[in-house]
Amino acid sequence: MLCCKSVIGVVAITAMFLLTACVTDEKAGQPTIDTGAGRFLYKDPATATGKSLWVWTYRPKSFTAESPIVFVMHGVKRNADIYRNNWITLADYHGFLIVAPEFSRDDFPGSWHYNLGNVMYRADSSGALAANAERYWSFHIIDRVFDQVRGLTKTNRKSFSLFGHSAGGQFVHRYMNFTGGSRVDLAIAANPGWYTMTARKEKFPYGLGGTKVTDDDLRRFYSRRLIVLLGEDDTQRGTYLRTTAEADRQGANRLERGKTYFADAKRNAQASGMPFNWKLQTVPGVGHKNAGMAGPAADLIKKSTAAP
Image 1: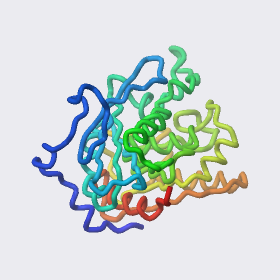
Image 2 (image 1 turned 60 degrees about the vertical axis):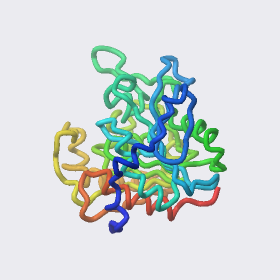
Image 3 (image 1 turned 180 degrees about the vertical axis):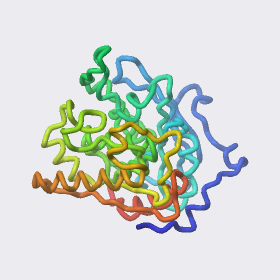
């Protein structure tokens, strides 16, 4: 269980401060990551559809080539700027570079293209699923954004921390499952609404049935440093909580579902003789709030981030 520190409450950004933000679309389209709050337009060279996305950033004055880099994944509202803002005071305090990609509804519609990474698609009117080629996966965009961030900042970092809340937490655990997260030093999935369980008895998207995930992929996934971070008050069944029969089998609310996911994965790993390097931690007094989860997550990242 994690306790919220006083720094968590200091997340509001004043209007005067935001006026200093550097927005790189006003600089002849040349991407930069300057000190302070800003954004740049990332054009993905690896997608056949030519998708692009805004990447919201915050670079503290203390930033150096050794500073940790934290990717922050937004929720269902696609409000990456707000998520970035929730981390600004924490970035100043811990010395993090914050990178918050925005997966717009226009280019990444619905949960299939964002939360589920576009790894599968409905092949026909019956609802049958087929695997997408990896070049279409939304997950891989994160690694390519990281490559551009490295070039723009001249960082020595070869890995990054990955945090996501709500739909962003869904993105994080599936990203780690399907890609292996080889460039991620710590992944934190905070308050996901539902999960892709690691068993194959359940068909995708509720499980791995029908996917190409192998035992070697699962072994790699279980060995990664993943924290399932849950607010102890995240027990409401609100508008954005999926309430299908498959989701409800995971639990009645986000707190229950997170515990189910962790316990089921741990049981599957142990039954297969695979290493299991995940942790489950809860935050008292916090419900479904990114701002409330950001502080404890930042503390975990600070403690775990090793020198490059």
